[in-house]
Image (cartoon, rainbow, N blue to C red; front, side):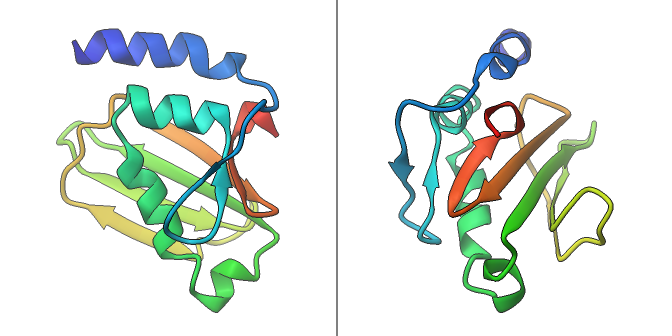
Amino acid sequence: MQENIKRELEENLPNFHGTANYYRHSIGNFKYTDGVKYLAEKAQCYWLLDVVGSYQYLEEVKNAPFQLWELITEKDQTAVVTMKEDSDMPDIIKQKLPYTDFPLEKIRLYLVDNVLMLTSEY
């Protein structure tokens, strides 16, 4: 089952470009795109949006005009969520997760102008 979801995500996520709809997230005062909604529903990872939202109240995060969020999973089902202002910048946020069943090895999301999106939607 998890392999099917992984394969489906790998096939479909790159096909999201732009968005037709914006959805408001209850934590962190941001909106998210169709692609992020698809990811959250298919991978059952609305918790990832909660993680992003929970840090939006920190000055160093909310003042960053461009946020690069990355979730990297390990084979032992632990993971690390990081946030930085760009790929060549140091981490501003680094949170270790003791357990996840997230189906992909890695996902990158951008938060730009209070909109969370897939990298392909930027």
